[in-house]
Amino acid sequence: MIAMNKLTWSTVSTAIEETRIRYNLKGSSEAFSYCVLEKLFPNSEEDIKDLITDGGDDCGIDAVKIIVHSTGAHIHLFQLKHCKNIKTAKNNFPSNEIGKILSYISHLFNEDIHLKEITNPILWGKTQEIWDVYKKPNTKVTIHFCNNGTKLTENHRVSLINSLEPYDILFEETDFNSLHNLIVTPNSENTKHIFTAINKEYFGKTNGNIRGMIATISAKDLINIIKDPNNKNEINPRIFDKNIRMFLGRDNPVNETIIQSALSEQNDYFWYMSNGLTATSSSFNYKPSTRNPIVEVENLQIVNGAQTSYALFEAQKQKPSILDDVLLLIRVYETKDTELPNKIAIATNSQTRIYGRDLMSNSSLQIQLEAAFKNLEAAFKNIGYYYERKKNQHIEKTLNKRIDSFKLGQAILAYHQREPDRAKSASDQIFGARYKERG
Image (cartoon, rainbow, N blue to C red; front, side, top):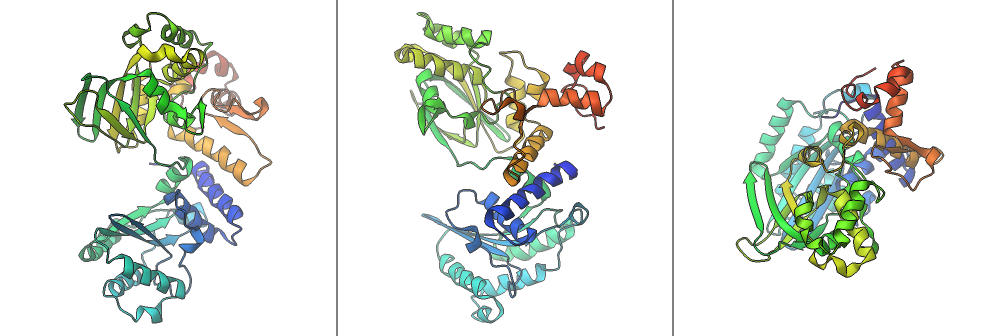
């Protein structure tokens, strides 16, 4: 749960203001609607303005998004409320328009032609589209209540869900907490990768909300997974977004050893000398009990093994054919729990020494700080500072524009906490015992 405070409120407000500027909108309420819809449907080809139905005679429906696919459709109806300040944001989502929405739903499912008389032209057009789409099999409807504040009270929420149940309508809420997470998490397209699990050297396990697979993978398959689809000579850094560190460079003694091991005449021993990789995913599939099954993985993230991955990529640049015999271990986990990847990353990273700032690099506070600087840069081009929660995260930027998390921690301890002597002598505690202190 993200605490609503000056920092997090600024992150969300700056994103809304950036949206207002980018779309040349008049006010923050309209910008909020655009911001939410843009974050919920990041890959939509439909213009955001074409989703908006807000205005007079909107029957409590502020936006409509209709997604049609080969096996059915999904209709999204939105009630959008913008809070202008942090004080009003702490009030629960207003329930006074629930009645209007339920009335519209009743008319909608009864295909009541009189809706034309009580809806604005845009919503009436959307209503007719819904009637056409709803004839398709496997069509779902979801009502979204979205605001940059607090959710409905539990009583109002239960009452609304019970009222929607006869229509088989789903209900979802986007509040300050979930909107903040959408803002600080970069929009990205779903990714799909494949690799071959060598021979029958694989093992699967399922436990509650997590499913795992351990297998042997070839170095060539790994390189195909991590290379940039638009530039085969470069690595796609997005596949390491959930890793707690960036590549430490080939000058790092461990990484130089990995490269030399892969290039040596005894590189067939690589499987035994490497810790391999750990990755998370939203799903993976393969045909069990078969030899060399093809494993299909969606939204793969390498949370441990960045050094091994980058080192092997560097090795194949020097001698492409040398990796023919290089195999390594891979552990892939499937989970919908958004907290587990970070826990797995912390638990499994031990091949190169991990410092406190590395372990905390994916903490909510560090992500909030990075997002705050990023949104300032987007909204006000003259700011131009880049926060590095991971060492050398923005190495391509000018040094005097980069704000290192460790150095910032030292500055806070020295100036804000008034402990300049401890800022140097006890700097290892900044991201350790003293990390959760609030001054």
